[in-house]
Structures are given as structure tokens and as C-alpha cells.
View 1 (tube, protein in one colour):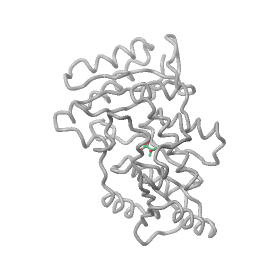
View 2 (tube, helix red, strand yellow):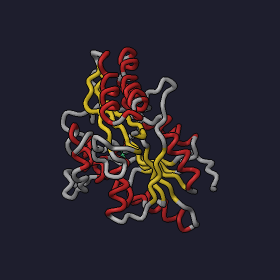
View 3 (cartoon, protein in one colour):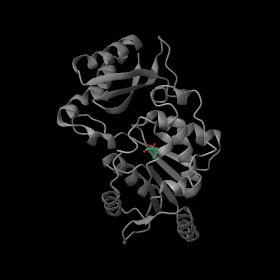
View 4 (cartoon, helix red, strand yellow):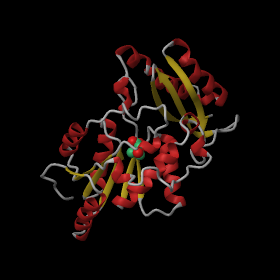
Length: 288
Ligand code: PAF
């Protein structure tokens, strides 16, 4: 593995990044890629550490992608912490931070061509955030073409995103290995998210409802789907400031809701608003 001694190099343009990576590849280096929207936390750092194990060169992109935000969502207030992010990535031995402007990524403004996430992209997160997954897949496709990595890494916390990215890579024969890294949690169970920084202290406590619901669902998994759904939803009974959006159990192979009498491995997806902050989480269970 190549030792990186200088700081992470921030690269704002596609042309420059391609030239730098071509040089490294000509020397025989492999490339791993971690796409992010910045405001980095330990969840991202776990992706970066795994990326460093997988390849000689690690590229992290930091780009708050307007295409995946709806008109009433938090695009403008989404945290932007580039200097702190680059400092942390330097510590972790990242070689290139691709940090393009919106006009670098979308020079014509509105994009004419988009990747569509299909039916599964319209469910769960996609039902609450119409167009989100088309925007996400479109930017991931662009980033994969720009970086052309051997491997790209995603966090399991965004389970529906992971399913859709994997399916897109298969459907479109993209030459990249997708590696998924487990969700990183606070000691009390809260899944790390860039949006956790929106929570005030009371909301931070209330946000534990999501992981508590997943724990309750897990505990009920031997008793079948109806119990899982009932126990998971019951966790939301206590908090005025927490509004459940969905709690659903899906088949990991299709990402469609499982049948009432399903047995075996399944994924519980949960989304809720805590105050004005939308949070998601998930857990794998075995239905019995
Ligand atoms: O998971 C995210 O942060 C974003 O959806 C991604 C993959 C960086 C695309 O903008």
C-alpha cells in the first residue's frame, strides 16, 4: 500500500481529477472511492478506513447534490464543513478530495439526462422524497464515470440507497465493485448522520426512538411480521416531538415488503421526523 505523506489534495475540477488519477493508475495504483456530501463523521471515516484497506489511492468526493433534494428540503442549510472535512481526511490518509462546484457538475443548470430508480425508488424514502433517488443515482453515475474507481463504498445506514446503487451497477454493467460498510452508532444506539447536528438536546434523546423501534422489532422477529410491525410502531407511542413516517419490513433481494407469512432474513426500515429533522435507520432481522 502506498504511504501518503502530504495532506489530502482538494481537486475542484473534473479535468484535473482525471489527470491526477490517470497518472497514479499509470504507476499501477488501484483506486477506491467514497462519495459523500461532506459534514463528515465516524460513519464516513469507517468507509474511508475500509477504502484504504482496499486500494492504493482513496478519493473522497464532497458534493451537496442539489438534484437529490426536494423543493422544501434542507439543501440550503445542509451543513458544509469543507476545511474540517479535509483536515480529517488528511489524517486518514486520503489522497484526493474531489470538491466540485454545482456548475462544475451541472454546467447546463438543469440536467437533461437522468438515471431513474424505477418502482423501488418510489417507495419508502422515495415516497416521502419524490425524485430523491433519481437525483442520487444520477450523481453517483456521474461520479463513478469521473473517478472510474475499482471499488466504491457506501454505508448500510442508507439501505435503500445501497440497494438501488447495487442494482444500477448490475443493470448498467458499471465496472466497479460496491462495498457496503456497517452503520456506525453512538454508544446509546443512535445511527450517525450528518443531520444529527440539527438536533437540540431534547430532540437528541427523542431521536433514540428509531433505534429503540429497531431493537423492539428485532426482539419480536421470532413471532412473525405482524408482531414485528406492532412492536416497532409501539416504540413511537411516547414522544410528541417524533413523527413516524414509515416502518416497513422488506425482502433484501427485492426491497419490496415481505408477505405476512414471510420467514427468514428481512430488513426493517424506519424513518421519522424529530422536530424538523428527518432521520432514517434500518436493521436486519430473521423472521420466524
Ligand atoms: O449518501 C450520500 O451522502 C449521498 O446520497 C451520495 C451517495 C454522496 C450521493 O450524493
